[in-house]
Length: 257
Image (cartoon, rainbow, N blue to C red):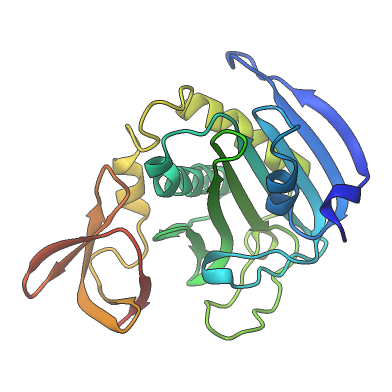
């Protein structure tokens, strides 16, 4: 589906008490990718535009991997224009993961953050987050979020964790209710985009870090390092205790050893 030809199911502003600005919601029935919609229309859309779809036909995650997006999930992307500092992108991804873990915890679901941008429940992936940026006509950033709510889709390529969903652990809520709760919490914990998104959140992230205290293999291209997951630093880098000392990683793929 051409993202520019998508017809909204609804358009409205969402304003929360205490928030300085409203969110501009565009709710679509089906779209290729909510993030692509924002990137193609970034020039005309206002700051804090949120695009949500009931279904995506071309959803994706890190490294160009597909993200299965059938009916029964939350698929949304947020436009920040002007962009926060570009180095905040991985930190914003981790903040979004921590906020989603807050919402899951309120439903009695224990979740962990699999660095750099996934959420797992019971060692299965329940959500993924992807920040992207651009500079024309002025700098912007798009934060994409996919959350399995009522259905755990099959993972087609076999390279990622198997999927889980909210409904496997608790009564599944309506996707638009989760979206509103997410936006409200994001306003509460990150009211100023010039601030480090991880300010005050490192303790929470540390307690939720997937494989914390366990050996993992970090792979980046042809290189790999084995170490013990020790935490996340204020820049959003993963800290591994290795045989050569503590190392900080800003990219890579994690696997348990």
